[in-house]
Length: 327
Image 1: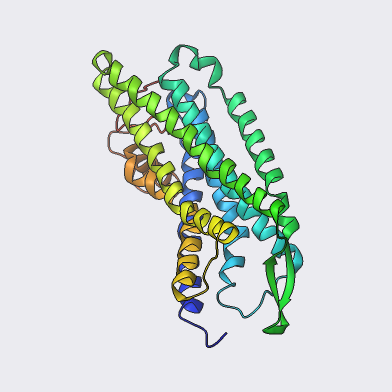
Image 2: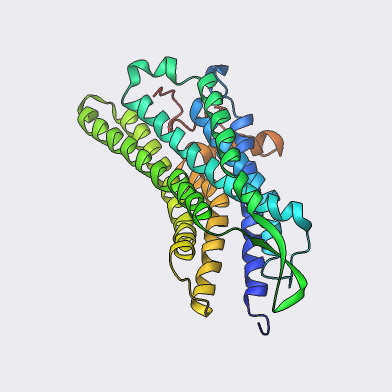
C-alpha cells in the first residue's frame, strides 16, 4: 500500500502503444493478404497465408478484448468491469497465447512438408487441411482455457475491504498441475517440435543447395528466416511470463519493487507479442512492402508503378522477385 508509482501512467501508455501498433499492423496484414491476388488468380489463400491471417485474427481479438481491460489493473484502484469480464479477459489471454503458439507449430510443419517432403506436399498442403487444422487449434485452445475462467473471481482484500479485485482463486495440486500443463502444451513442447522441424529443413536445404537455383534458394531461406524470427519473438515475449508463473507456484515469489517491476515487464512483453509480427513482415519481406504500396495505390489513389506490373504477394515466398516460385 502507499502512493501510486510511475507504473500508473507508464503501463497504460505502453499498453496503449501496443494497442495502436497492433491494431494497425494486424489489420494491414489481413488487408494486404485479402486484397492482393496471386498471379494467375488461382489459390487466393495458400496454407501459409491462412496461418498468418489466423495469427493476425488471434492478435486482433486479444488487443480488442484483453489489452484495454488489463491496462486498468495498474491505473485504477480496483476492478470495475464486473465478474464476466474478469473471467473472460484472463480466459481469452490464455486462449490467444495457445492459438498463437499452435499456429506457429502448424506453420513450421507446413514449412517442413513444403521443403523436405515436397513430393507429397501438393495433397497435404491444401486449404481444406489448413482450415481443418485451424478448427482443431481454436477448439483445443478454448477448451484448455476454460479452467482459467473458472478460477478467476471477484474478491476483496483485508487491506482494502471495500474494494473489489479480479483474482485467481484455487490452490493446491490441481492448480499446479494445470499451470504445468499449460507450460508444456503452450510453450515447451511446441518449441521443441518447431525446433525439430527447422533443424530438418535447414539440413535439407544445406544438402540440396548445389541443385537449387539461386532464386529458389533465396526464397526458401527467407521463408524459414522469417518464421524463425516470428517464433523467436514469441519465445522472448512469453518466456518471462512462464518463468514467473512457475516461480509463484513452486517457489516463494518475493514481493518487492524489483519483482513488481519484473512482473510489469513480463506483462508488457507478453502483450507486446500481439503487435510484433506485422513489424517483422514489413522489415523482412520486400514483397510485403510492395504489396502494401499496391493496396494503397489502388484504394488511396496513389500513383501505381510506372511499369504497370502487379506485385504478387505470397507469404510462402519472401523473395523480392515477381516470378512464381512454388515451394
